[in-house]
Image 1 (cartoon, helix red, strand yellow):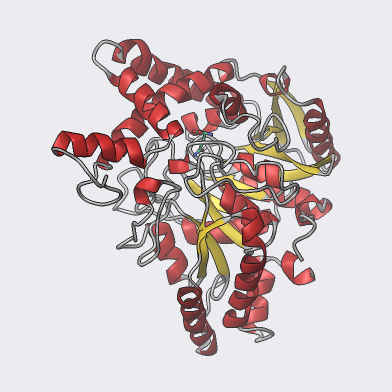
Image 2 (cartoon, rainbow, N blue to C red; image 1 turned 135 degrees about the horizontal axis):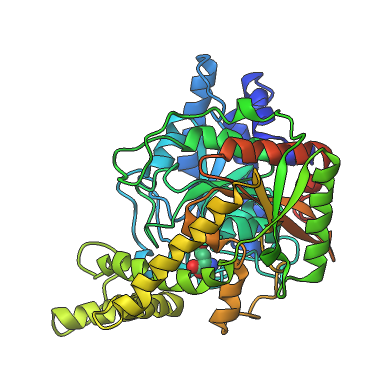
Length: 486
Ligand code: GLN
């Protein structure tokens, strides 16, 4: 129905005008989840009573005339965020029975805005993956074709938004986990500048790369969510001290004369030709809207994946050392002594991909290899950042594909980690540099969505959202939703 494509702002208006209550809206989405989650596996946990209680409180706020723009609106939360009283599994057996005792800052901010938590979404284990097949809770299906993966690691949030089981969702992006699923499932996703959204209460994977962001139908919806999610947080030492921006009020700027940089490295071998065609025609559309196209180069982009797979596992091996079976999470049933308990707990509690990362990370940080791998990777990381600094001297925004292909078959890359890692060839360098980037729907090939990636300079989220919004004013790719989810 048309209801399913309503913007967050229209939903907010409907609530304010009492066309429907938050409790009705929440029930509507809970019903949809009940109907479709068996086939999609997008949610790890739903809690009707909790969601409806939140909706009731929002209805009271609205009745008192004190709503803010997200009051009463259901939002799906990636299961990487701690929300008090809710499970926070991070897709792992290690945290299967973990109930969060406190709210992540992001959750706290949604709660303060009166948004309704509609459920916790499935994800790759500890956000490691590009297909949602590493989840302990089973794979997520792509709503456009149930035989295909939704992308990852935020695959549950992706499927939820694409099948309209929630009007919007949160995701996290360490190497592409918001943008790649956005591309494979056909919606709008934004990874903000590192430090713009607090990581407090967000289960850590690779702390120098992790960043939370919105996953929604449109750039406008992402802007509204960014208004809630951003802000300095003294509980996250990498949170930036910066005045909060109003992203909604900056959506209607002109893009005449906008300089779009096209990195030649993003259009080389490995890119699916049908994806390339659609990305090029989206860029052509920008040209028609008055933008200027400039060829640029990101000469170190080919090193982004190898560098990432040194740095991210290094940080993960350190972050995941906290899962020792002592304080919280899974503990093995039978053991001889403390060491045996540690070994069995971690052996039984972690899946294969997580173990692979811990092994790589421990190796590259070890005394004999630190300089050769970890330190070297950090140096190349700086070169990758400098490529962007140089590029942004010539252009305002960089455009290219979000992912090298459309959604692929479940099982196809599962046993081939290197092929899986290639999914992030166009997204990872921005995480290494800490830059903001978006993926927006740019058309379909064989009935499968394709995303256009927009990369901006530091703290240019308002500009990126405006650029994405102006495209969405002239196209309706973002309004297409998967069939069979009525
Ligand atoms: N696919 C990448 C990985 O497996 C990125 C995941 C992410 O962004 N969380 O690490």
